[in-house]
Amino acid sequence: MIITIDGPAGAGKSSVAKLVSQYLNFLYLDTGGIYRTMTLYLLRHNTDINDPEALKKALESIHIRYTSSHIYLNEQKVDHLLRTEAISRHTSDYSKNALIREFATRLQREIARDENVVLEGRDIGTVVFPNAEFKFFLTASDTIRGQRRYEELKKKDTSVSLDKIIENIKKRDENDMNREVAPLIKAKDAIEIDTSKLTIEQVAKLIVNHVKTEE
Image 1 (cartoon, helix red, strand yellow):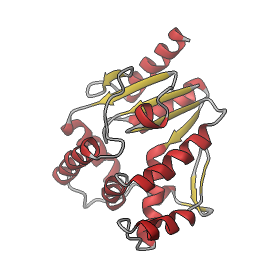
Image 2: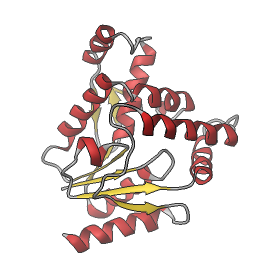
Image 3: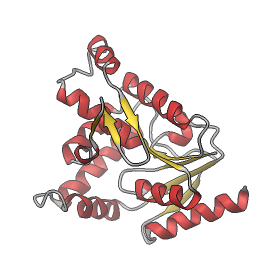
């Protein structure tokens, strides 16, 4: 069974997807983590993503191993390197590239093959798994999403600015919704949940209850 959870940055997708996977004993697949891992590699190697040949060569050198606990880039555990503001900013730009998205989509499908999986992202229910059994779309206000990301980042970087984070989230929304390849949109058959006034646990239970009721 495939359960997709899409939505903009800071809507709570990752936290909700993790809880849903725990409640249902499904594999949790952090698709954003895959894009962040690719971005980390490309930045490390100063890859010009606007040079198709250079990008193809770089992608051939990327090996991502995904487990329920960690993400490995060429056998190096990189979880702790993926949530910086710099990686977030570049990931938004890089994820618009068709070659990068093709690589990530192929990897996501390989990981999810023959598994019960909860996936979250921006185009999971529309592009990666358009025939998923259950689709959800999470939203929240800009301010709420910025505050959530601020609370997450300030634990690692006390110099982060709430206003800057909200500004970056708005820019990322614009980028994600207006990109030519796999834009952020709600699938027609997805259930929308506004998480602004709900806890992570409440959202996860709404999803789990719906899945169990409809099975």
